[in-house]
Structure formats: structure tokens, C-alpha cells
Image (cartoon, rainbow, N blue to C red):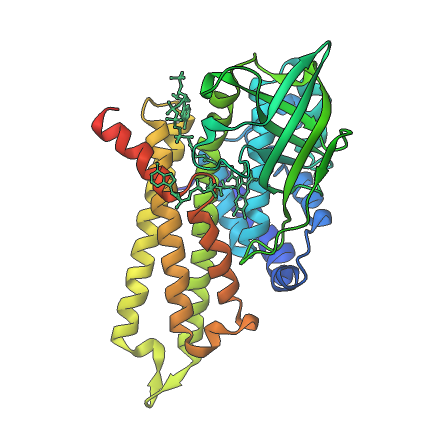
Length: 378
Ligand code: FAD
Ligand code: 2MC
């Protein structure tokens, strides 16, 4: 698993070239202008990045989760925010591939895998984040439709997307009363709030989604009524790994730039890179990233193998890698001195982007809840 064969190397190199050529040169400008680069996403789609682990008959690349985390690490070296949106799009697209019927797959997946269509994942609500099973957006059956009322909060890609995979309540309280629906973005009665002003992740929009008597065909139900929470959580297992990979890529880029910076910066008569105390910092940063990457690849292999401990391994990897990634990026900022704090050096942007990975796709406290349950057998 740790020595890549030629095919695996080619996949990683393709993702790296895409990041070097199309993401990195524009990342600072997109952050400043809060620009969502849809044209670049379409190019990602043409390379097979829109359905990385989706089946080939609908245009997917049908790769493994292990390939996916390596791809997301490379994409994030160019821009963690754009890489993370591609990750969310892949999560939603995989949910339709895995739980959709043939009509749903053929209707949506060719457009989604090519990224001509963009997807969002809508679980969180204004009153409910970590305690997702308590969500209250209602879907009431009316003939051949569901009528949706409620609101979704913090939805990545909203307003620029074509479709939501949305978790709604069709039954009683609790996880078993939740269903997953494919909701077209142009559904009458669906509207979005303003783009949130955020600390980072500025190259993708985050908006509230409001549902007022929004009518969605019942044929858009994924699986059966009551399956929605399980579908949502299974999507998130892989999503958590990809977000962790985005932290790896951002932090690795920050570390690489720090080495280059210290090599040319002189103080007290020599290069800062020759200072042993600073070399020790770099050694610890590299060690942290290698440890996190090792756990991440182990969790991805467990997900590929559908191992019985995949859920807690994904949670461990998400918690560990997003914490490590943020700490490494923040140390990189420190080692740049005052220049690390300036936008043009690009390090503070990585720090801002990586901070939210400790919060979303399940906070790192919730990751500990998941792991703790596996330890104590709850
Ligand atoms: P809360 O659940 O209110 O938690 C507040 C604090 O309490 C946190 O520190 C939490 O860890 C802690 N806490 C809560 N319960 C426990 C517990 N049992 N034990 C210990 N600590 C606990 N959601 C989507 O559905 N789709 C998206 O596309 C999406 N994109 C996002 C993009 C951004 C930029 C952001 C910021 C969020 C996004 N989210 C999205 C929402 C994100 O998943 C939630 O913010 C997250 O799950 C936390 O929920 P909350 O904000 O309601 O915090
Ligand atoms: N994988 C598969 N199944 C899972 C699962 C997982 N990771 N987590 C829970 N389930 C199943 C569980 O096995 C149970 O199934 P069954 O009814 O068959 O026994 C069912 O789901 C209910 O689970 P719990 O009893 O554990 O539910 P509980 O409410 O106690 O806790 C918790 C669930 C806290 C783990 C869940 O609510 C959670 O993960 N919260 C965090 C929410 C989150 O991650 N939001 C991210 C939003 S998306 C985002 O941020 C983006 C940027 C896209």
C-alpha cells in the first residue's frame, strides 16, 4: 500500500499537474474575490474527477477510496477550498450511484461525473448540526410528490449547483424517520440565502437553503423511506477521508514552501534553514504529516474493504489528519515570521482554509464521540 505502482503514480501525477496548472496560480485571487471557478470544475470533470469512485457505465472513474484520498491530497496542494468542493460533489454523486435506481442514475450521473452538473449535500439545519438525527425539514407525501418545508444551513455549493442530495424527515422522530431525496436546484419553492462571509473556503459559496412548499417527485427518493440517515452517514465516511486528505495537501504545500523560504531567508549571519531548532520544527511537521497520511491510507483501505471497523477508522483519520494539518499549516505561518501573516505569501490562506476542516463533515468532537463508542462498546 505504501509503495505506489505505475498506475497509482500516474493518477497522483495527473491530479498534481491539474493542481499546479489550474488551481495554484489562481487560488489567492479566487479567495480574495470569493470566486467559485465553475469553468475549472468542468475541466476537473473532463479528467474524471467528478465521479472518482462512481461506476464507469455513467461516466465514473471507478477508482478506490485509496486512490481518492491520494487525489484529494494533490488537488489541495493547489487550493484546499476548491479541492474540498470537488470532494463534496463526489460524495453526493456517489450516494446517487450507490443508492439510486437505474432511472435516477441515468438521469443524473452522466452530467454529475462530467461536472456539467454540480451537486451539494444537505444535512445540516439552522437548529441541528452535530445531532443530525434530530433534523426537522419535513417532506410530506402528496400524490406522486413530496412537499418540502424547512431550511438547510451552511450548504456548500448552494446557489451555484444543479442538484442537492437532501436529508428530510418523512417519518417519526429519530434516525429511522429520515429519507434522502434528490432535489433539483430549480425546484419552485426552493430559494437560497446570501453567500456567507467566512474565515476561509472563499473559493466556494456557502448558503442557507429555504424550502417553502417545494414540490419534489417521489421518484427522486433514494432507497426507501427511512433509509436516509444511513445513506447520509455512509456518504460521510468517505467524505471525512477526503476532507482529511484536503488537510494533508494544504499542510504539505505549506511545509514545502516553508523549507524554500527558510533556505533563502538569512538571519544572524546564516540561512534560517541551517538553524537546528528550526530544522527540528520541520522534522516534527514532516513526522506529523506522515503519521496522519499513514492513518488516512489505512482508513481508506478499510473503507474499500468494507471492514467492520471502517466507521471508527474514518472518524480517527478525519480527527487526526485535520488537527495535524491545521497545526502544521499554522507552524508554517510562524516560520515565515511576519511574511506568513501577509496574504501574498499564501500561507495564511491555507491556515484559514484548513481551520474549518476541524468543524465540518462532523466536528472533531463528534469524531471522538464515534471513536469513543467503538472503544467502550456503546
Ligand atoms: P453544533 O452541533 O451546534 O456544535 C457546537 C459545538 O458543540 C461544537 O464544538 C461541537 O463539536 C460540540 N458538540 C456538539 N455535540 C457534542 C457532543 N455530543 N459531544 C461533544 N461535543 C459536542 N453541512 C451540510 O450538511 N452540508 C454542507 O455542505 C456543509 N458545508 C459546510 C461548510 C462550512 C464552511 C461550514 C462552516 C459548515 C458546513 N456544514 C455543512 C455544516 C457542518 O457540518 C456543521 O457546522 C457541523 O456539523 C457542526 O454543526 P453545528 O455548526 O450546528 O455545531
Ligand atoms: N456509517 C454508517 N452508518 C452509521 C454511521 C456511519 N458513520 N453513523 C451512524 N450510522 C448508523 C448507525 O449504525 C445506526 O444504524 P441503525 O439504526 O441501523 O442501528 C444509525 O445510523 C443511527 O446512528 P446512531 O444511533 O449512532 O445515531 P446518533 O444520533 O446517536 O449519533 C452521530 C449519530 C452523532 C454519529 C451522527 O449524528 C453524526 O455523525 N453527526 C455529525 C453530523 C455531520 O457529520 N454533519 C456533516 C454535515 S456535511 C458537511 O459538513 C459538509 C461540508 C458536506
